[in-house]
Amino acid sequence: MNPTDMTAVELVTAYSSGELSPVEATQAMLDAITERDRTINSYCLVDEERALAQARKSEERWNTGYSKGLLDGVPISIKDIFLTDGWPTLRGSQAVDEDQPWNVDSPVAARLREDGMVFLGKTTTPEIAWKAVTDSALCGITRNPADPTKTAGGSSGGSAAAVAAGLGPCSVGTDGGGSVRIPASFCGVVGFKPTHGRIPLFPASPFGPLAHAGPLTRTVEDAALLMDILSLPDPRDPTSLAPFPTTFRGEIGRDVVGLGVAYSPTLGYVTVDPEVRAIVDRAVQALDAAGLPVTAADPGFSDPIEAFELLWASGAAAMLKNFPEGARDKVDPGLGKIWERGEKFSAVDYLDARAVAADIGIMMGKFHLTHNVLLTPTVPIPAFEAGFDVPPGSDFTSWPQWTPFTYPFNLTQQPAISIPVGRTAAGLPVGLQIIGPRHSDDLVLAVARYAEHVLG
Image 1 (cartoon, rainbow, N blue to C red):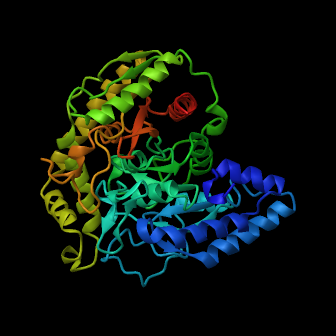
Image 2 (image 1 turned 120 degrees about the vertical axis):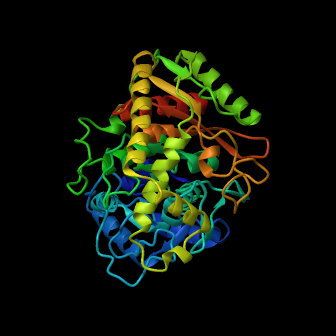
């Protein structure tokens, strides 16, 4: 099998048997990036020298019968939001000065490095990860491997596109309103947003309680393994949770047959593309037939878009005020408008929006007393033309208007995963979102693994 087609688990198995070496796998990924990424544009930095040096060290460990971690020698990419020692973190912005020390690892980069993973490079992001598609004046447009005329989604679009295109088996992105799950759905990969604080962040995100990090992979098992690495606590994040008592990989095979599952195809207020709705309906019906009894049920909250957009704009303004003088003239025009809007809100406005989030969180807590998990489409539409913030010809004026299934669960800080469940007639991937109560990351992964098995 070509290493670029292998999952992280398959690569580790091949290293253990001697069938494949980390150097061979890494070189295959680097060659694929050179060959394919000119069209997709998923990477903003590729460091062949560093990647091969890390791979050689991993190969030495495997040759002596010693592996450093769970995914020692497995190539991975990192979204250009996470500080990574030795590489600039420009956050997709021309306003960030590259000429400064870059000698700190974020918790994400530190955990991956400690595990012995091979860093291929950094993946593209819209400026400061502000929107749900991936393009920037700094890096250009990131395109969908399923159809390069379409968007990969965002803001972790580079990570999702890289995994979908075989340019590395896994990546790590951020998710403040759907930024892992949206591109996972559009590109046809797995994207998991765990409970807030499960993966530590440093520096603290200006998007505060909305901000999560999460893995993008080809399989749920790979996502669970990455969670075992990434979820170790870090003293630099005062909101990080205590270590998970067992392992996520060990929990994904648990018996979930008979769990109470709710399906809300619209959340009570979303208009869904008919083809997307039909694909997700078929997947849900298959799960019901396979032993996950599904009940149609809406959570009962109304669209919290106003509260979300207030919190989002406030966070953007808080970050951008620390940018160098003159930055306002350099940033994405859409981000500039968000910046200006965010500066107008008061502390009372912010706390009112947080109260909306708390109310929805309480409502979802009660909902999950009856329903173990909630299923929805991940995105109500398939991927649209690349280079636009909203679907051309639509009535939408902001990205949250076309991502109504994802951002409510950033407000509530619940774990949510997107898994691929089919493709449109045009070949565009469609995702199913699985949401669980806060701190039920293991349950969400287990249901996702079962669904992955049932749906093939």
